[in-house]
Image 1: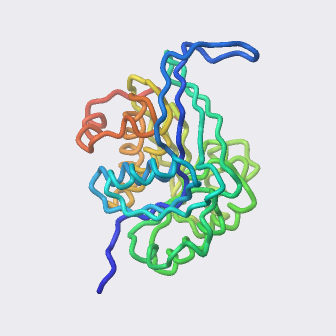
Image 2: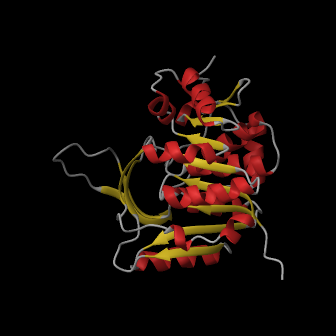
Length: 310
């Protein structure tokens, strides 16, 4: 019997997010009343996979949970989204959690998060068939030993690897040679290369680790990529911002969706920026995941924010 095929396998983070909407961020030692409080699910890889599932892709997710009630919330949500999933359980640990202050007027957020060191995806938990059945592997910087194992299996099968990396670490230096498309924060290429200018850091990052292309997300400034020959840039779209949580997750979902569809980098960046922008119109990491038609409409008719690279 042939194993089921998937478009994308995501390995990495999920979280339970407590959102505290406030009129202004509290200063040290102060008290502030919340305008609203909600507990919502998030996590960069889990959210990316859910977005891709809603856009019609076949998805599989591998993550870690603790022995608490949040673990069942994640299972219930993944079942509801009809995602094939495998969750490594650490009974004596709490599932990853975040407390997110959202400033009502700007939609900007500040995150305080906690991941129990025991909360891991053991490399022994991973099955090679999960990787081999996917058309694309999507990973983050957590559990680098496990994701390096998965990426090496993907490389052996010529399966493209897309990664979401926020912070530089020595472990990532060993993982990056197995990543085709690292999509990073603005600061990671600078930290990884020692360069102060992103326009020099991105080419150096690609040259050092042999990636197909490297991309940095820049928040309201959009996204910038280097493919070894030229830079590709997309300004962000103007939207009504309610909460910026999850914008990066939706950018990564859009980027992965574009890779799977064989688009050129400019089209990928434009689509990913539009998906990320629309997600900011609602509270929570997954609150503004939009249909493909709405994303494409914003691309056709929406206005852009000012370009960071005139």
